Image 1 (cartoon, rainbow, N blue to C red):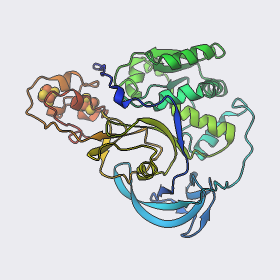
Image 2: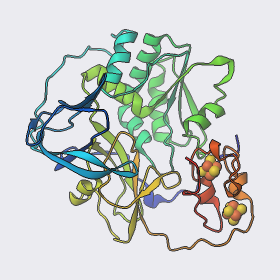
Image 3: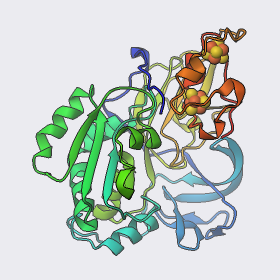
Image 4: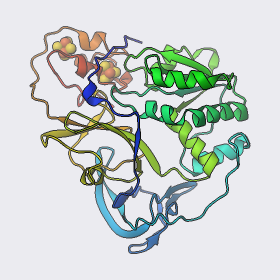
Length: 377
Ligand code: SF4
Ligand code: SF4
């Protein structure tokens, strides 16, 4: 692996440490994926957590109660796709209440593996000998993981310990940044109760929060290690499924940028549109000359409209002023190659199949050349 880089901090982008709830959007948009069977009809009333779409053993649940209005096209990831529109009746009428077990330790392996998939917490089995928990936000100014740890530290430690116990792991590593003093203090205070969890403090370098880079830095691929990799968000989702027996219908994201009044970490219903968040003044735009970047200033991608829908894949939204600086000619400084963490040379299409889309080459380039569209993935 190549070098990791230290990125200068700008306080304008700081969000947290509180999580703001925005759980009553006017509408919810659920992408209608090919191969799924529709369980609802237009004008039909739906209950919160009722099943809208099914495919084999996969279920898509309604995050709200309301009425099915029909379909429209919204932006999901990078593309406009057909979505089911549900108008909120703001009653939060629940489908059914399934009693959960009193403790996250009271489950068998098979039960856990079934529930976490059925309720959309995690889509793989939790098997292996080493469990790696990533508490490092991948992107600069993303504060989603950090805020989740700060608010839910005891639930998180209990769930990690229960998974370790139920699945009989040999090793459990929980990584956080070494400069997050508030969460270090909280975790160190509680970790004595959980001797199986090894808390590892890592330097604040980019892109250490990337799965492959982290596994490589920790040297975990030796001795045929079978690693289960979970983010802190996965752990919280697993906790919610095991403790509440409810599908995952909410999502914590960072909304930041230099074109908004105040960056915030917000908890929203999956299927909420950015337009709804802005129209309801949860986030206030202070300059209309902006662009929208999804999942990070370095490794994220731009979308052209506020019709972007919050899905499970979205960790952050940045609303930033448009760039004024034009790209200049390459001065052959070689930084884009030298600083690439996986050794690609994006100018010469060298090893681009290894690219992890971290965005360092674009960030580091003194000529402001944007390589984001040039790469393979
Ligand atoms: S080529 Fe890919 S991996 Fe290398 S710095 Fe650029 S974006 Fe990152
Ligand atoms: S960092 Fe920019 S200017 Fe330097 S070699 Fe790469 S493309 Fe050229």
